[in-house]
Image (tube, rainbow, N blue to C red; front, side):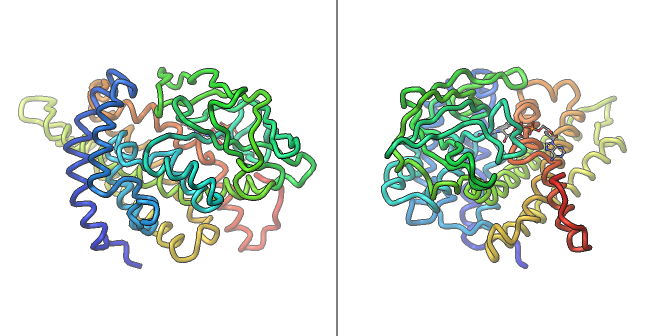
Length: 403
Ligand SMILES: Cc1cc2nc3c(=O)[nH]c(=O)nc-3n(C[C@H](O)[C@H](O)[C@H](O)COP(=O)(O)OP(=O)(O)OC[C@H]3O[C@@H](n4cnc5c(N)ncnc54)[C@H](O)[C@@H]3O)c2cc1C
């Protein structure tokens, strides 16, 4: 196993790191003070620079204008972009669009790719993904209330979604809806592309999350679908394949999230260390001279490095054997790295004292926005249970009810 940076990624990193730290990070105070909308013109300018660098949509194959990287190579890029809350957005590698691009790339028809993937890849529009519903436990993704009833060559959708991230301003939503209520649980639902300007599709509100309703790409919508009519050719893949596609979308997607989280951890670690050497608790006595602070720094260093190796190993395995073979590893990194992220952010805030809560560093923003890491794309408990069941099955435990 060789997880070192390839020559290609080294060259990308040499351009990317100074751009993120020098051009994107300085915009953060405005993001925290004025919100995403106020920053959009400036972000558009930076997206233009990302295009000029030839690094826009790096997750896509070269034929679609991307960097044509393996998942392992992309993981390194994701860590660099993760250093700023705006890094992935500037390079058009942000969730939920990156997952939707992957879906369309792998399962879209030629016409669907032209209509939705091309403008997404070029950054001309944004999209969202509507699976979770307020009335049903999102942890059980085969249990949904939204339906898509077929009338000839049309689907008629009715339902209620929430946490539809980035819905405000999105051109379309990939909606998970039940198309065959009588089928077996894993074959009941399909994924259907619904333009957000279709009559009956409404963004009810942006959900207030930890004190912020957010706006545009940085928001989580509550959505109603009331008799929304779309042609049958808006369905992705076969009817009843929705659950399988969702699983596929989440495999590499979890690598993207985990490496973004490692990027966040590195930035938080950096801030924590700088604070430890510059803040004095008595004349000539920096915080870093205290064992409790040293302990936080050492624990964080060990946890971040171990987490990175786990994620790179998983990416390497997906590259070689596919997402299905690596599903145990994917579950492992999902809960492990989300926990490391939370602990490192907490330590960095603690070392900053009250200043850690002031929105002059990204620590508070991440604390609010990334608490969800242990919930979205499968809560910790679900991934831990999946890992443990697989391990115990190798020791002879019979499959039982989902735990
Ligand atoms: C920031 C953020 C962004 C999101 N973006 C999107 C998006 O763009 N599109 C979308 O469709 N959804 C999105 N979601 C929703 C997310 O996918 C769901 O929150 C997630 O699937 C969990 O579902 P739930 O919230 O309904 O929790 P529930 O299913 O109600 O679970 C509640 C809690 O129960 C516990 N639990 C669950 N299952 C088990 C179990 N088997 N054993 C033991 N304990 C268990 C866990 O602690 C869990 O947190 C987002 C969520 C967040 C926080």
